[in-house]
Amino acid sequence: MNISVKSEYALKAIFDLVAQSLTVPQGSTMAPVKIADIAKRQKIPQKFLELILAGLKQNGFVDSRRGAEGGYLLAKQPDALTVGEVLRAVESTRNGGKRSKEDPFGPIWQRVDAAVSNVLDETSFGELARSWKAKHAKYIPNWEI
Image 1 (cartoon, helix red, strand yellow):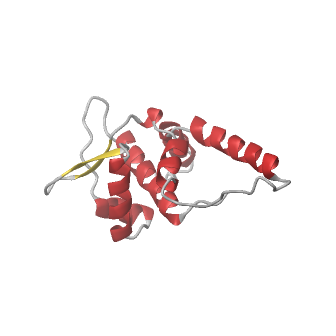
Image 2 (cartoon, helix red, strand yellow):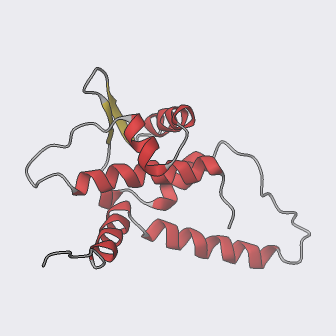
């Protein structure tokens, strides 16, 4: 499956916001995350990220706050936000991938597309971030003597 760089960066930006929300103590509210911080952590060009986040805001995935302490926040709970819905929203602006009805492989590609969509729709950002955090927490070196 090929996705655009824009989609990949959108997924990374949402993932970054989710990962930041996991570091907030329970009962506290998350401070907005600055674009520059997301861009640096995820290695995304800041100007491109600004456009991507504006699109994600229009689609209701993120909210923004203005001012010196401003930035971006998730508009939905991480467990209610799936990889599939973000990809579809970002990719909907692209034209392409239409296969001819005369293609003998058409039914196979439709089944492949459906299988991929199912996996993406069943994967929430909350689940993804928790599993990533758990995986990387196992390998923290301890240099105590």
